[in-house]
Image (cartoon, rainbow, N blue to C red; front, side, top):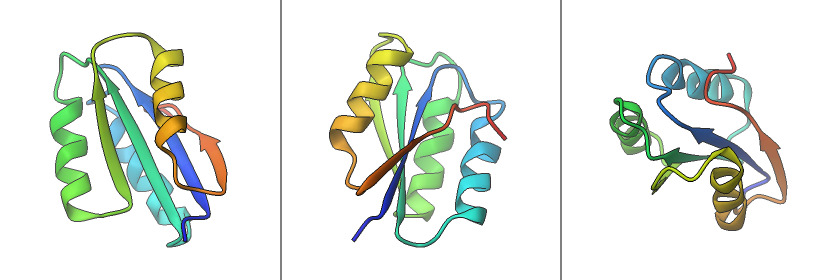
Length: 93
């Protein structure tokens, strides 16, 4: 059972997103998921998260056309599987 869903909206976050996800996984228990919503990024954000999610099933990637951070958070929350939800921005390290 997933205890915590970490919600991460991302828009043009290729520079930071790998390190942000790594920091979550390094500190967090196994009963966790990271739900990343790529909010229509124009850089390599989607490809980076896609590669990370292929290597770790706790990472889920959801894509959407650019609709803003609130829409991205709402989309992630609606698909979260955890009992608890935490929010982290893609450039938080």
